[in-house]
Length: 499
Image (cartoon, rainbow, N blue to C red; front, side):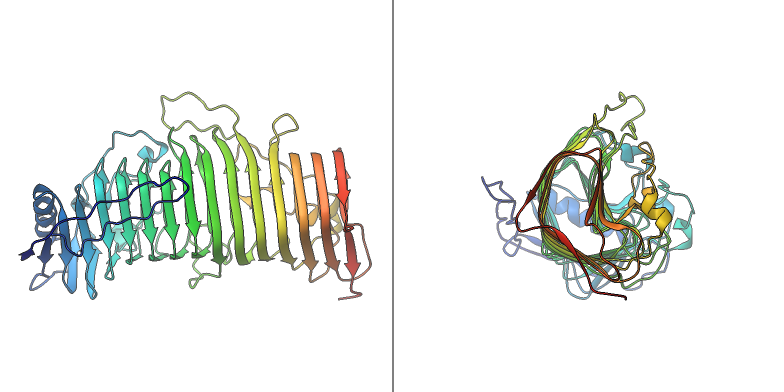
């Protein structure tokens, strides 16, 4: 190890009207270099004590950089300490140990539903401040190793990759993260988090999420490339703390589940969320560990099912390809307790959502849908503006006449409703729905209408169009709807003749 001196710069600050931008640059901070061992035996963890000693020394000195020099390292759980910036030089690879004994159980003070899912991780921090992980090296968690192939969903024997709990001023940047045994990175009840320029590839096991932001405040996720088997960039609320003041921007996301998602766990809710300038693209992997589909389930999934409130969500400038239901907004009542002793949550709220400038291509005969719980518990105030959705068709006359079963207590994936009676958008139990400059294009045969709306009160249609092959058809079917306003320019369907 060798050390060179310097002073550490101050960390993240929350500025009024802005999202966090970390200044955890460690260019002039004291640096402890860790060199690779002369020989690293496969399946062992000889580097854990040396790396942990360097982290502890930097922390004891008041903060600094621990840098892995070029080479390969094998490690079990590392505990990141306040003021320590863990850096992987170009050509440095940290491998997760394939011995379960190298991952001690860690049970955090903050209680959440993830208590039953995870007790181990490769890099762990709890109640730490001013910490970071940076590249350009990479971390391979080796979650595909036989010891981690347990075949059980949410198995706590399978470690997470990175796990930060109740931490402040956290940055992860310019690093490649691959092959976790479960969720790749989990930020729980943290404040002031910046995740930038990550490359994520996670396709070796069940529950292979890309980025999970869970009950955190003041978060920025930007310029990341995420390709995951389970959810891509996912905001959750597994405990009482809400996810709030979160910006996701300039990311490219692939997923065999939901690339951009709020939920499934929703106890604390979501407030003031911005998702913008992102692309959803097909995965480089066609593995089917989770849902058995090659495409995404929904490009944008927003939901409340375990109590909590989803309020003020703005999604804009999204291009999405290959999803079954491009837009999925749901209020349900699974009512799962976040811990065994917690009270059962009441019915939550989904309100004030604005999705603008979305271009999406659906695959299969499913469609986008916005579904509340009942007329007494609707989704409130949703605006879809400047939307273009292309659908392949495939709906039958039976689909067109079907009344979807809501399954309010089940797992809230869009395929729970099956084929809806519309090929473009199905909305039910919504108060305050605005469709402005929305276009649906049908590429194949389909017996369904573009829009079917049930129990929608306070509906505004402005420049809503559909292009359909074959004979002309109505644009929309309204069932038990009230207060409908149609604004100019007119809404219509255009037939292009037989396909």
